[in-house]
Image (cartoon, rainbow, N blue to C red; front, side, top):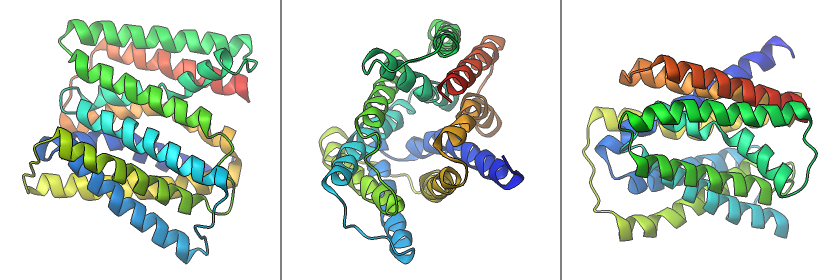
Length: 286
């Protein structure tokens, strides 16, 4: 892996991990589903505009439209919607840790449901990830972490796992950024009526909200997506996915630095064990 790919990978994972902190700030000052609806609308329109400038179009196959709709609902609607609601009551670092389980949940579901072969190293990685999460969750729940918020995060990860497995190979090539932009618009369309039904809209127009919203829209929402697909095109999906092992550590580190969230020794041990589990699964699948 050359130095440019390394820098791109680190930039991506740093942007992705920071999304939980910026989102946690945003939902402090505005209704979560409302602010997410607007964010996805803007990010989706920007992505489609950039895709058009790159020569991409919306002439998709039936399978690609299937991916757009299903992934838009499950990832941008259920996963992000659950996450934004959960971040009202749980720490951003804890949300990042739970979300970082995705490589493990996808590997486990592929193994159990689709009977994909998983070497002993991968099975060991799944066990390590489970142990690491148990170390963190037992401490957090006994320390007063909101059970409802934690449950919503796991619902979101389950939805994203299902989306990842159901649309495998459906994105195709050539129109990737266009597909991502359309998925964002689908998520926005799904979340808007949910916001109308479930929320009493509130927006406190502070500089903190403006800064967090702008950052979340342009950096994790758009720039990270662009860098990810450039990185996958440069080094391949499997090698690019190896950067995800940094998500648990960076997620809690950024939340601690920006929001002042407390970190315990058990948190650090659990994060280290989860990271080791993700590395083991990625290496075994390679």
